[in-house]
Image (cartoon, rainbow, N blue to C red; front, side):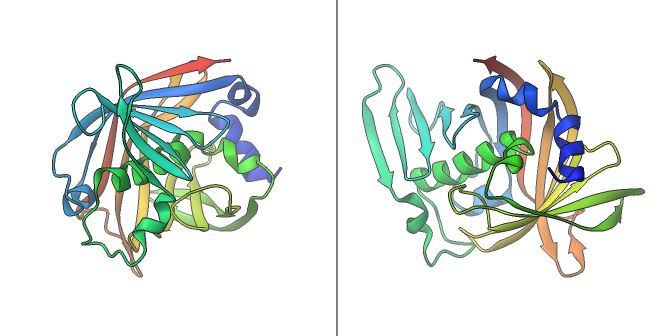
Length: 240
């Protein structure tokens, strides 16, 4: 394993702790200018549950009252929380974003796909980076906020849905993830994603606030508009 990745995995709870986890629940508030542009101006409080082993996310409540949304890479759907009755579905959801630009409106299923794959990646990182198929390379260090951060460039395998194929991860001297740089392929946005206030939940170190901002050739607009803000209210870890 890459030495920096090994440090990061250890700093966030360790691989052995991760292997014992079946799922993670996060109660959170989702807001931001990006979702407003996409047609969802309200701040949404919801619960997100991810599977640790595979890309699968459940959001509840989602969409209409009494419903929940379920994300998988090849299909997303909204179903009744009472009896599991399917209300609406979208197969091959990523293909539905073809031709989209930042101002293109989303429907509820497209938002579900975006939030579903994003939340799964956020909660499973850095642990999924040790899987076969990831190409890991350490870049030159980066100075920011009075600290020197080490940088991993990660190329994702095709079977992991994520924002884009190649991303950069910034870790402080303790191995804690501080920032991620990526391009959001489904809308063409160039972003820097900052992580704050890490806390220990049953042995897993989880950032409890995330802020995504626009990135320009001169660097992130950290005093500008927040594209997406995630405020974690509670985290529950479920072991096997």
